[in-house]
Amino acid sequence: MVVIKSENDIRIAINSIRLLAKSLDFSNVDMQKIIVAVSELTQNILDHSGTIGIVKFEAIGTRGIRIVVEDRGKGIDQLERILQGHKVYSQKGLGLGLLGAKRLMDEFTIDTSKEGTKIIAVKWKGKKFG
Image 1 (spheres, rainbow, N blue to C red):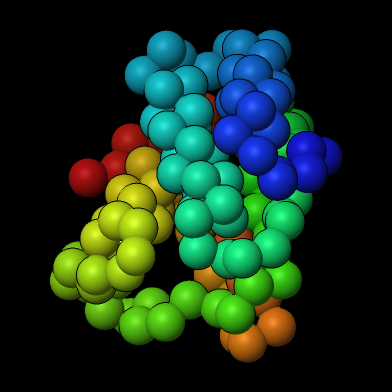
Image 2: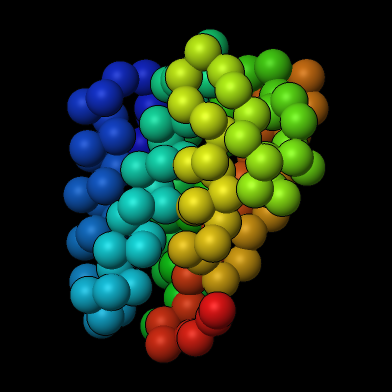
């Protein structure tokens, strides 16, 4: 688990997920997808939640990685519009990082409310989507 409260914590999270993906022998392409997703999701904590957050990684056997990102922020406004690809302007960004992270992963669930947000993303080794 990595506590996300600064840009340096994002770098720690990226290095951690890189090591896990490498140990599971993910391809370089899939490793890049996982790293970009983690980068986007953890940056969202700093940019939008107004709180600290956490990111946890775990291997799913030898074939997958589960990423859990949580914060205790105010929730994600206009989530459906964001996930449909509509630009949702905020103080930082267009809301497209979340959709991009979703597209890079094989499974992606979001639970968001006024008490915070929890995102679970899974990448399977060798799975082809899109």
